[in-house]
Amino acid sequence: MPADRHLGVVLAVASVFAVLLAAELAARLFLDPPRYHDAPLEFDPELGFHGIPGFREERHDADGRYEVVLNREGVRGRELPAEGAPRAPGALRVLFVGDSFLVGEAVREERLAPARVESALRAQGRDAEAYNLSAIDWGTAQELLALRRHGPALAPDLVVLFVYPANDLINNSRLLAERTTVSAGDPIRPYLEREDGELRLHYLRPWRAWLRRHSRLFAVFERRILATRAAPSLREDFAQRLRGGLAPREDFEIFRAHRGAGDPWARAWEQSFDLLRAFRSESEALGARLLVVVVPSAYQVVRNAKGMRLDVLSRSVRGQRLDAILDWNLPERELARFFAQERIDAVFLLGPLREAARAGELVFARDDHLTARGHEIAAEAIARRIGEAGGAPAAGPELAGGPILLPGPAAEALALLDFGTDRHLAQLGDGWISWRAARDGRDGGWLTHPTALAVLPLREGDLVLRGRVPAAASLPIDGRITIVGGSSFRLHLDAPGPFSLRFSAAPEERKSWTRSEGYVAVLLAPGETHRVGSLRAGLFVEALGFEAPAAPLSAGPR
Image (cartoon, rainbow, N blue to C red; front, top):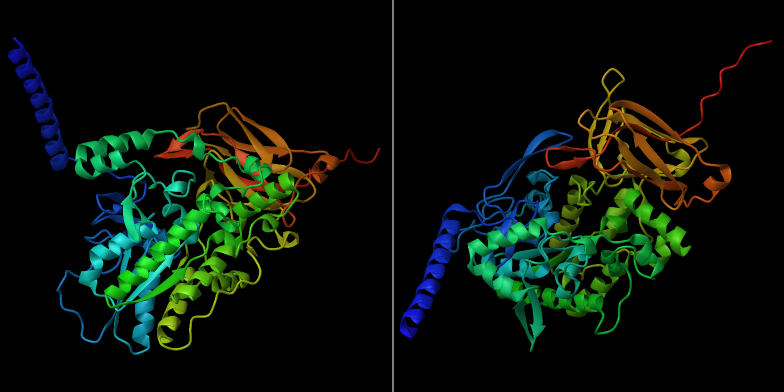
């Protein structure tokens, strides 16, 4: 009997193993690698994730329709050459490596920095070919691993590494993983950390990483869990952080000085420096020169609606301007010191982008990535630095001043934003989905998310909100419209169709409202009323701002 029992156990285990093996084979045959982002990325056992090979998506800009196309390696631009493939004799081969700033979905391929640098070098009479090795949400460790994978076949003469400190420090450190909302890839990405003088591979959850790399079935199952998992810890309370003496957002800690071996941000700086040293070594081993391009955060360059909201909160909670709490030039200063010490060539974009913003040019898109003009500025700086190779050392960053006020002086701004005729992008933050122009003077405006942010110059009169309740909306709608650092008003709508609402506050109450450069930040929060495809939507807004009450009708002479 014992022998029969043991045989039964063995057969049961073998049966389970056979079922799992069959399921794994079926998963590899019929299931694509799982996607870990809403972005066009799929799982990669070595890199964590990479662009989806052959991906195509239609986009639109001011010039009309264009396509974002990823080649067979899942990157934008020309196909990466196979090892041993012939190359044009005498051509300067430039390899760009980076993250979403180089993917540049909101910019046509020919207007991205790699294509522009290639064109600029050709215009100078130098034969050149540029390659773009980048993926959304990659950290420096993933970029280094990608260089190791593709570098030998590419055999570049120059490696241009785009560094975005505002994300990269977080992406490079397990201590900061899942502490911010900036990157969805933290649980999946590989981390390279120095141990015993070498960079060694680590993962946030090692056992899951091993299963993920070896089992398509587990990877797909895990993705279903991650996609539906709530992450309440990532919903940061800006005011609470400010009251605690911190930056309003965890990722803004990069603009505060951190010291001490136990501080996670200080450790993230050291890990990033280790990776940059490794990038130089890997580039030199390929026979290539390394040029690092430092891309600033949009918050460092312009004071947009989102930055003004945080400034209002800082003034309200701490009694200090945001600029007094955060050092907007700190990342560039830290990197300039490091590059000078390590003799790494670098280009800093903070000064040129601020200069362009001061001249009224739009250098950052609504998603906080570079516009086509931003890529043009970057390409000009890179091409100029390539031309200076072997000459004077690279100049340090221009660190004078702070963010440029994007909406312009409050005294010159419109008190009431009429969205029928203009998008008014300079005064809008997150939460505005799609805009349409008015036809015959009607039906123009913005469809919003459940919450939407705007900044308005504080003027006399009532706060006015006009728009339309979509026919698909669930009724009644009970929400709020809030002056950040001031009053909050109830928003109640119980019928579809047009609406016009006015909200009044006593003069003394208005005086207490916190302002930034003469603007108040306004949060419209109707909540989710309906869905448009996969998007959660709120209201259709036609106008928002301050407006004097209508004068009462005169009864005429008695």
